[in-house]
Amino acid sequence: MDIFDVLTLIGGLCLFLFGMNLMGDALERSAGSKLEMMIGKLTTGKLTGLLTGLGVTAIIQSSSATTVMVVGFVNSKLMSLKQAIHVIMGANIGTTVTAWILSLSGISGSNMFLKLLKPSSFTPILALIGIIFVMFTKSNKKKDIGVVLLGFATLMYGMESMTGAVSGLRDIPSFQEMFIMFKNPILGVLVGALLTAIIQSSSASVGILQALAATGAVSYGAAIPIIMGQNIGTCITALVSSVGTTKNARRAALVHLSFNVIGSIVCLVIFTSVRAVLSPALLNDAATHAGIATAHSIFNVACTLLLLPMSGLLEKLAYKLIPDNEQIETVSELDDRLLTTPAIALECAHNLTFDMAKIATEALRISVECLTSYDKVKAAAIREAEDKTDHLEDVIGSYLVKLSTKQLNETEGAMASMLLKAIGDFERISDHAVNILESAEEMREKGIVFSDSAKVEMDSLSAATLEIVALSYGAFIENNSEQANLVEPLEQVIDRMKELLRTRHIDRLRVGDCGIEAGFVWNDLITNMERVSDHCSNIAGCVIDTKEQNMNLHESLKLIRSDSEFYREKYTEYTKKYLSFI
Image 1: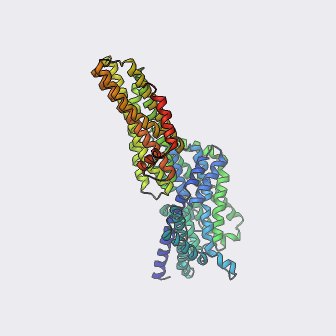
Image 2: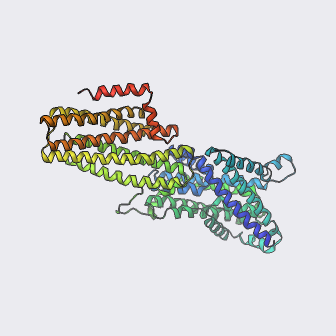
Image 3: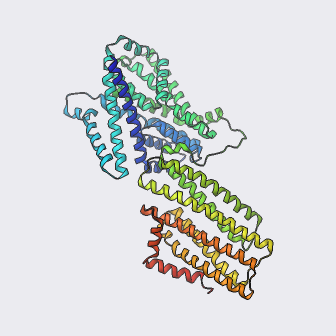
């Protein structure tokens, strides 16, 4: 093996790792909705959690990514520690899929069918299809599929390059002696753990081991302890990810480590006992690509079968090592760890926006109540709600900006844009709730009382405002474009009410039915309620635009108002309902 073989090995390793990373990222993007569905079905059942972890990892080809995702879920309180344990166990089985895919490069034979199964035969075709999808299609979904194919072709070319580069090592005595040394199981475990911790991927380190196995110098006796160590080394990603998280998130990372360490220790004891007592000839045989994939699968499945019934003990161990204390933890509403899976991160932002919407609309409702029945507790709740919506707007907005730097598909991009617009409108609704409350407080402090006719008008405007808020909130929560279409005609009626109520109040001032101070409060109230309806119109327009994946809000609202029998019918209906006092 000369310097050129070393350079080829380095290049092959870089291609292999780059291809694996490229393929994994593209798989996460293209499988985003499937990941949401899988994680949405999580229950406390062991089997369900196990299958979820297995399925997610098989899709995105990385147990490390799945475990980091789980740490993020636990940190955000989207998943309990008990659920996380079962998902982590499933992830350890799901990661074995990669080794089986890589084992295809070890196929040999003169049979035509076997030659077609060899990656060097079909990866050029996959690369061609991939580059066509990336360069000549406009659909983001097809582009992601193209990147998956290109990533797969790249890692397979890297695997082939590594295999070819190390083939000369079979004739070097020192290389053979090194793997004889690795027959010491403890040393093999340490080497496997160290290599995997450095590259942070057990799938990649298994692939490297499979490439080295092509030399014929790697026996099963040396390979099996290395595989055990690889499962320990892969925990480094989750452990690093858990730094600065809640105790439960750190416990989830610790469960991942303890699960793999305990499983490795038990299997290592069994392995050394069998080797010492029975001395099976298989352990001295040269390991093959498929043989390493088989050993990897057997080890991970055995560890899971061993520790699945004892998941409760793993949970207790985590609590023992990281005990609770009386200090209250600050939980991040949105975890940056989830940004690696944009579909999940977007869903979390969406759910938090739902919370923000509920807080803002409830504050508005209570503020209207305070006009007729002021209460200090209600006033404090409104101001607290306004502070919360201010905070949530900053948190969600910053998170969505970070998320926008990731590669989102068309649907996800439209949803992110809608959320960015909607959080601003909900925050302004809570601001107007405080403004209405301040008007109620001013009336109470100064003893201002509206005339009977003014009370009737204000009650009608308040009812219309509460209805439009309820309509826009319901349309947003349910993503219901039909309900969103009801908002614009009511918004136009409220606009008309504002001008009409202002004119009627001037008439009352002329005849002395209302005072100047009452006029200032009156004007503030109708202005705030009309602006609330404007924000509700924006929210409803965003829902309609997202459904149609069209971000031209003003154009959408214009289309709703123009030549629409439905719009005219609803406008007439709301006019009769809220302008009956004319």
